[in-house]
Length: 376
Ligand code: ATP
Image 1: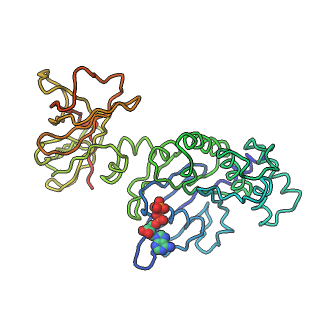
Image 2: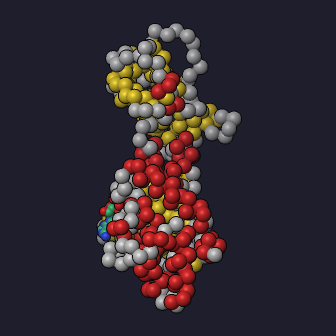
Image 3: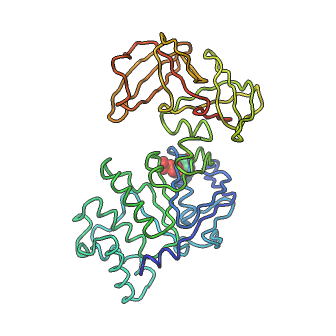
């Protein structure tokens, strides 16, 4: 059936030193990247970082300035888009409004001059696969947003591409539908065992969907890793900031000591705050660097508390705001010595309402283990 057919054609994608220039603007700079066959990969980053350009270069909609692109073991630099065995799904789904669902799904096969009988079989099969056989005579506007997305997927998959590209496919949807459709995309990808490459600027979406996340910054790759690794160990200040809520401290490297796990225990001198301990791969003492701590990995004590605690890092801060957002309560603070804004997040269940109030001076504390050293 179609499931085996799709899984058997899934191909990996390789980029070797790929650069894209638009006149004097370098949109993508010397990227080398491997996306394994059958995996879900998200290109993540802020507007203008080059993610759409990477997607379009793989699909063949954009010429590359230098480097090489491979789909499977085929070098595709000189192969036109229509012959690359990729398929693209867009934000608005781009369904033809005046064609029926059946005609929409059939379109790509018709373009490829697939014989009539085979077309009928393949369209029927894929519509059944996405559970929408009964809608084949309708027009796209007669379907819900979620159903339209499934039709767009069916249309993209019916040609049996080796790689499916998705350009912000969920960004037109409202939040609830977005989360539902994201689960559906992931399920279909797993079910078919296909290679999906998606562009998104939405961190949570990239985490939820991906086997591997590619974080882009100004046309370069800052980090390529599994979601959990990016979340726990951002590789740069840019990635740590892009996650949203991390507390980042910049300062000078004082000294490093090799730790038993192969990384270093690094001491940083933060102006006004004193010394902080972090874990990572050290650089030359004297160099400027930073460390990052997730707001949910800190804890808090009232400054009057005298109990000795094992935390390597302690910063005196004043509570400036307390927001209960549901599962999580967000506590905004300001470092007493420097005025740096900080964030502490705690499970609402664990937040002690009676003990803490806005305006109160407290101590934020966290371990070196939970503090990621960032060399750049
Ligand atoms: P967004 O999320 O806003 O789509 P992006 O990360 O996908 O952003 P790209 O669209 O790949 O970013 O653009 C990367 C850079 O290349 C930007 O600086 C953009 O202005 C530039 N750029 C893209 N297309 C062109 C073009 N056709 N001509 C000139 N510059 C371009």
